[in-house]
Image (cartoon, rainbow, N blue to C red; front, top):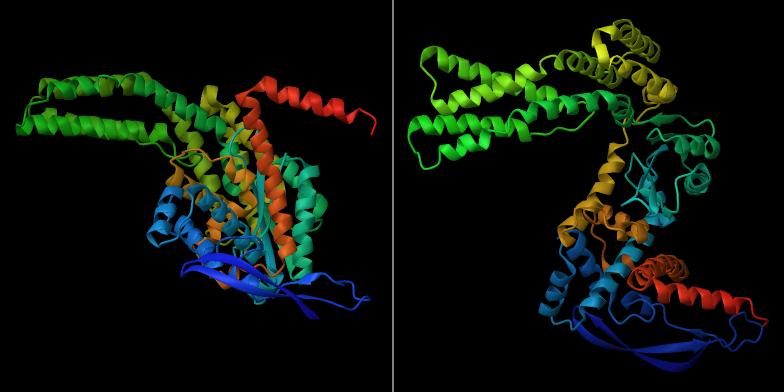
Length: 506
């Protein structure tokens, strides 16, 4: 190796603008595969990325401000300017992209993963997908439940078995390279996912999420509860006029009546989450408690006109819906009993637990006539249970195999939370799918660990370039969609011209 020439490069770091003078070497041996090719000093990569104008320390700071302090792009730009770094706001976005790519490569490094998982004897895979909206691609993530490490993250066009099998095989290949076995898999009950796991990971226990199971099995029960709640709320629309009649009064009686009105409105607006929270039953119970309290007041003294009117509203709603609640209450009692059995707090053996669950299903079938028009919900519950089958009980036979896939759902929620805090968007942004394979990973990891500038340095620049090329391809797809929305005629005309040119002889 002989020095060929000097190369000069300007890099902006947190300490200021730095001028680098690099000695570029060239091999003079004609038999060498790298004959006369330039070899740049390795230390250059510790300062900045190839062709990058900003140092790795600036990129690391942008990542910290975004994912640990949850700052927006304008706020990050303002902080960099305050530190004396002259940068355009669009460039801040580009540096954030570089951070996401570099931290994804850092987390996927096999040496780091081997060191991270060396004390584990097994890996338990959690698989789930995130789709911001209908028509978007689906971001699929395979994550180890024991360590929380993301092994594979890919954006795919669909959720078919054919799409998911290569994803699972890639995760299996990673585990094989790390010399660690896959002890189990946890997913929701989607049929294509089940088929993909059976095809790619045959013989590995596959647990189906209890939460997804109960939500699907109790769906018609939750719908009946919601319908009853709506019917009850129809009779409670006169609460605000009562409150308006009390405006301007500060006496104790007016404050007490206003307190009852607030209690009713609090009950009406308190929504739970299915499958275990019965919003309608809870509303009915709370309104009965309020009604009982007003009755006790009426027994000791007469009611003010406003409170009497409120009592009439409450009693009218309870009377109009009183025939709906017994069946819903019985159905939800079975759902809660099923959830209690699946929680297995008594630590029963699998065989005994299955027998107890079969007994519950038998009881439901025998007593379903008591539900009246709600009787078909039992058949639906049993049908979903039969569909999930043995997948409900694998977690009791494999150590550390979770009952639900909620940890991965919360991992997705971390990325959505950051996006909402910094952009104000309530719904998941399409950028989570375009750059989801790095953005979701960066959002989940950055709140737990801090990566220094030296750790961001990619050990394999070729892998970083390949990753960036893949992400740029997806970005270009989004740009083309935007161009079509702006001017469909021009966009389609350009496609037609491309096809015409492709048919011409070369």
